[in-house]
Picture 1 (cartoon, rainbow, N blue to C red):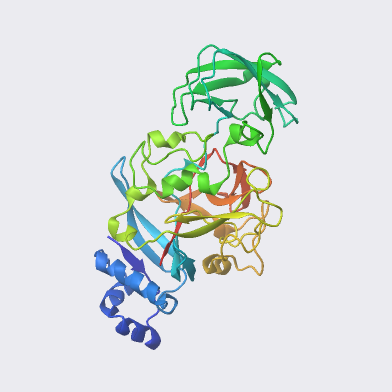
Picture 2 (picture 1 turned 60 degrees about the horizontal axis):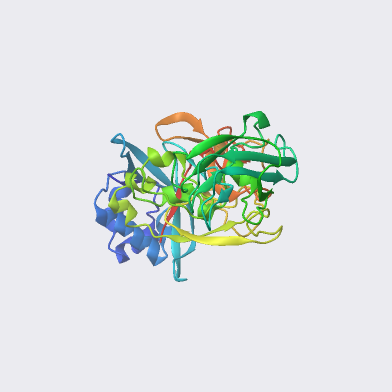
Length: 407
């Protein structure tokens, strides 16, 4: 069952609006907390939003409460969405319409990788035959010391196959480095795994640099995943009604299957059609990093159209790296934080930012934002369980306080 919690504006002006739209009975019931599970009631909320009068009927902080079901266990959870902002949104095709932004009050039940560790090299023209190959690290990056490193394959890698270099490459001693080969980006069983050692033997595949070079992927992304929202695994998970093993596909040649695909269904499988039917994909703009994706210090964004999305730094009223590009600051967070300027990063903390688990409302959770840390190819921003804003790696499976818009 779905409901909207108070307060909803019911002054004279609001009542006139409701009467005009023939929704008085529905919204009077909602105002006192009565469940309104019929599809028509949610449609009436959408009709109010589409009329452009939602801001006169609903208040920032009102909640639309819908069930979300973990289809792997059958367990259902009450999932409140806070009304966080009113503003214009854009649909596919360029139509701009009134929108009402919602954000989950609690964190998702579990985390999903923003993006998995990516492959270093893809076999594109003819099979990669058994033999010795090497790559060069141009600049020392922590434990990934400048030099040339080699590995010897004993099994052929087919066209479309991937060569994956050490995960956590900058945090792992060279003595523990391994190389794994796969038939494609969806395969989780390696063709083989071999040692990687210092040496320049065999065929050179190229240079490992943060931006990526020639046929070799970014050294950042082979070790820690990609921070590009448009190509992320978590974006696919959030916007899918597909089941376990079905909601992800490669978005670039280096892309690798996320760990959660094998056990978790698409996020949208948890909601009923009555709620999903009032949501429309909207344009979401995200700043690109300046290392590998074409962003510059003062420009560089790309657009996606998403039903569900992660908030940006700017929408959370945190200091953006590229101001005025990733959406308006949401009124909810401006009011909650009570600041005259956007929130600062770690070590400054804000109690208002703490988000708690949907299954345990006393358990604070780290939640992920979609904004890339623009100075790397791997880091995205988070709001940590301690109430501060900072960045970390893309490969981590982290929960989220997901957003959407009725429009």
